[in-house]
Length: 77
Image (cartoon, rainbow, N blue to C red; front, side, top):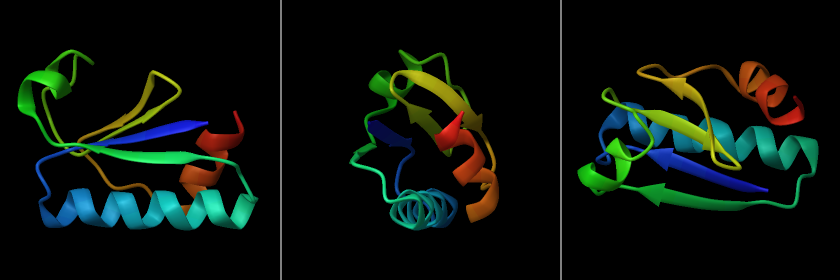
């Protein structure tokens, strides 16, 4: 599973990365976490607001930091 965090490294982006990593570990997933910080690359996903969460190429979250349980649901879907 490829998980991407879209954002410049702001506090919300870091919180999203931490929550996502915690959720993936709790689920015992085999995953790769990538932080995408380049604004042009972020825009290729159609994301105009950060942070963003992309799972296997599908944008799941834009502009907010979901809780660990919410992220676990997204990763299992």
